[in-house]
Amino acid sequence: QVQLVESGGGLVQAGGSLRLSCAASGRTFNTYAMGWFRQAPGKEREFVAATTWIAGTTYSGELSDSVKGRFTISRGNALNTVSLQMNSLKSEDTAVYYCAARRGRAVSTTNYDYWGRGTQVTVSS
Image 1 (tube, rainbow, N blue to C red):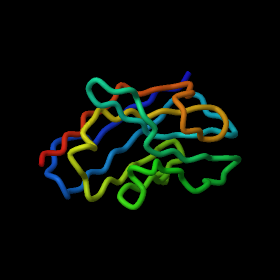
Image 2: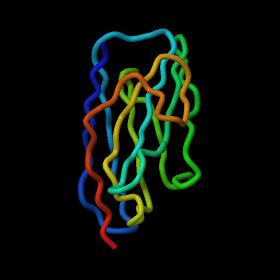
Image 3: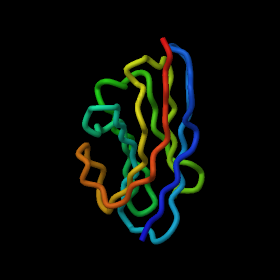
Image 4: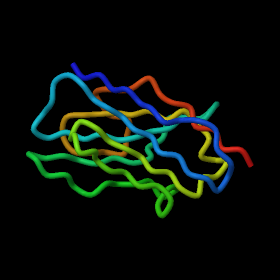
């Protein structure tokens, strides 16, 4: 079993920045992915970013088109952590952000095995 705990959400003005972090504990796998999804009120959960770790190598992250050029996903020094640096935030980025993990490579669907409880990000215009 894997437990995921997010941190770093909050309230920020449009154009500002926030950094989300996620720490995983429990069992690990030779190949696994960690990523971020978000869900705004009344909308479906959507992919934001993810990165894959295979046998000690971290592969470049994948980002949704809506956040490319503004968000960056990175692994922490401890390979069981992942961060999401969010710059140039817009009001449409307001949502609950969820950390997710899965065995295998990163995918942009919600087909992940483990989920955190989520952290609220609110961008005021």
